[in-house]
Length: 334
Image 1 (cartoon, one colour):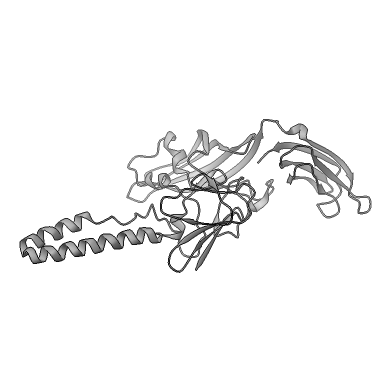
Image 2 (image 1 turned 90 degrees about the horizontal axis):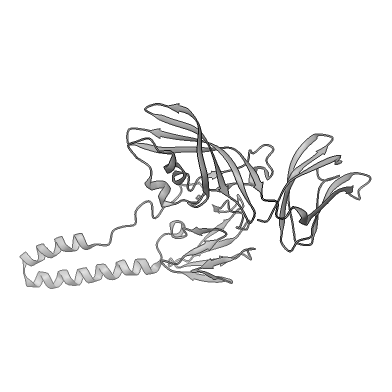
């Protein structure tokens, strides 16, 4: 039996950078006979099979659509073919064998013709695109067929085609000083990118095509990410392929809808005269609050998820030191 964990946590086997996905969202359990089950791990936003939210363990069959957060999960690429697919292949082979036996009795000439027909009628094997597997020892990353179909082109990529090439790649805030630090990543989906703009071409020759670009990435209920990235293409003699995507920083842009739902102020943290920043959520929804606090070490960024009708705090004795001042930069519903 194999168990594949899926979630936002870096410890998951399949890491998904989607705000609507829990840290350990679900498990894909594959039994010894190849049967696959989806097991929801008490996720916040649920797991859906063919549009229905599941509870506990549900068997997956070929063609089932598995959704978590804001994305469709290509689960068959992680678990391989299910028994129903194998059974169909087995049935087809048995039928061809029986047909060949009858034709052998009918005569050698008919046999030769039927062998040729049988060879051309076999069900094609799944392509590498359809059964993408990560190299040994690496965690799989959410991948879209579109991002692989665009490789190997003869001409350098046009600006309008680059967003499709980005599908499946991950970006993050700057690891040092980011709001969410190193455990926050965003996996680009086919509908994630808008407003793509090529800002600067850094390298343009027969082998390399490197640029800086700006675009928006889909966020949560009332925000998006203003994003910059360095994008590199390479031509190794077989056409232009996307080589890498490097994050140059992401900024949360909010519409301010939930700003009034957070009451904040500097208060004593209760541990001996040290102040912290208190954040109280008066809304019906969990809200993520981001900004900066000033302590003895200067200004530092923070982000905190505050549950509905609950209070959180940053800074203080166990959170970075005495808070002298603060700035709230966004309040968003994830």
